Each structure stands twice: as structure tokens, then as C-alpha cells.
Amino acid sequence: MARMHARRKGRSGSHRPVVSKNPDWVQMSAKDIEEKVVSLSKAGYSMPMIGTILRDQYGVPSVKLATGKSIKKILKENGITWKIPEDMAFLMKKAINLNKHLKENPKDKSNRRGLQLVEVKIRRLTRYYKRTGEIPEKWKYSLDRAELEIK
Image 1 (cartoon, rainbow, N blue to C red):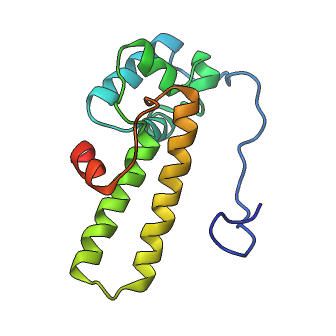
Image 2: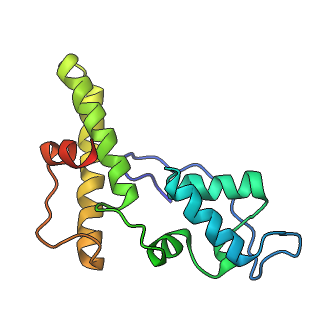
Image 3: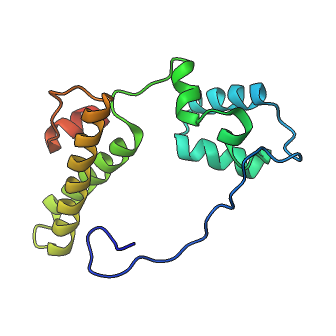
């Protein structure tokens, strides 16, 4: 697959092997995994970080295979939600930092282009999340709004 904002091919990477059931060597039960996901989220970890911690420290290769639910669904069932979806919040934080850098270095053209690319990704995600109903239809991205909502 080609890169989103470049005219070259993407890098090949490793792919998770196709597994349809939870491995026998996983020692935690589904209920324990769900409790650990909730406790890690309350400790301030993001969803990707929760998955990494469970994989590296607790030997759970896939939360979805072990529990039948994704990390996002587990958190939603336990009443842990965000105003803005996490992936979009991370992109907005990146845009804020790039904008701050550009105020100090106005001639930095490559980072100006980087800011444009990040904002395009945010707008694309906004359309998707409006369509799926995760953010309100009237929600609109702007850098000022992002600074208020993220920080």
C-alpha cells in the first residue's frame, strides 16, 4: 500500500499471525484482563499503551482473543469515555506542538507542511467520527479549539 502523503511505496512490516482462539499458555482469565484494562486506564494509560503493557508484562498477546471484546469496548462498558476519540486527540496534540514550533520558527517550511498534513488527517478522522456518531455533527476542528480541548 502506498503512503498517504508521499509518492512512494510503504514499508513492509510484520503481521500478527492468524489465530482464532486464545492460546492455552495465557494465565489470566477474561475477568482479570478486563479488571486490569480498567485499572490501567484509570492510572492514565492510553488504549495502545494498555495493550502493550498487557502483552509485555502480563503475557496477554491479544485482549480481543482473550476476552472477546476490544479494549475500547471494555472501557466503554465500564463508563470510561473521552470527549474526543484518542487517536484524534493525539493528532491534535501533535498539531498544537507543531503550531507552537512554527510561531518560534516562522521560516520552517517543512514543519509548516507537516502541520498541514496532520490537519488533513484530523479533518479526515472528523468526517469518519461524525459518520459513526462518536462526535457531534456540529463539531468542527480548529487549532484554537484543539488547544482548549486538549490542554
